[in-house]
Length: 95
Image (cartoon, rainbow, N blue to C red; front, side, top):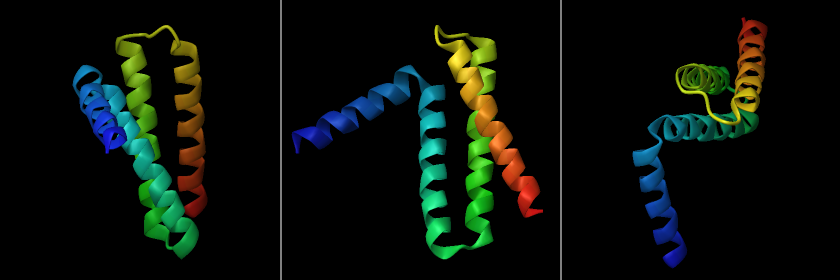
């Protein structure tokens, strides 16, 4: 029970101190969950929603780094661009 209490408090503190990171985290977790659901069902709407969450998270990362660069800005930008390119390629592939 302490583990869950600690985890929940950490989640609340993270959402208050770094809301952009928290939103990106939630979007990426939803991306992974939808990708898993798509892997089981093979239904197109799950994959399209997964790709749209990934694109949203990548754009959010790029905007956050453009407004307030962090010490690991190069890594964040590279990861966001890679995620954006892969997601856009996935959208084009399904169309």
